[in-house]
Image 1: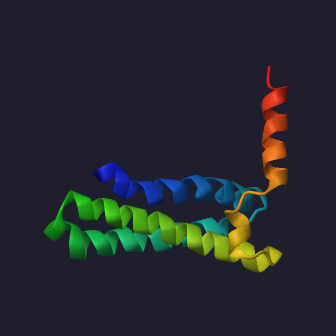
Image 2: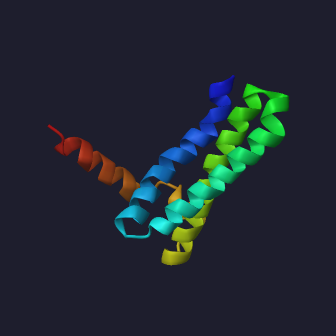
Length: 108
């Protein structure tokens, strides 16, 4: 039940962790702060307006929505900076698989 509702949020959070690390490493913390603030606003508004009436399942929906919006904000910032289509962030290519295989082979 609840885990299925959380899955889109968990997926978004996993991508967001990598993108946030990039922004942090490049000294652009403002993007992370703005995305987190957007997510916080979604959670507060969702909790106040929906969760108390619809319960724990709505809380899961609100949390997932917050993670997804945070990810979309960050991806949009990256897209503008590097002129990459949005699909380029999520679509695996053959070179990606070759790179992952090389990482696995070099591990002790």
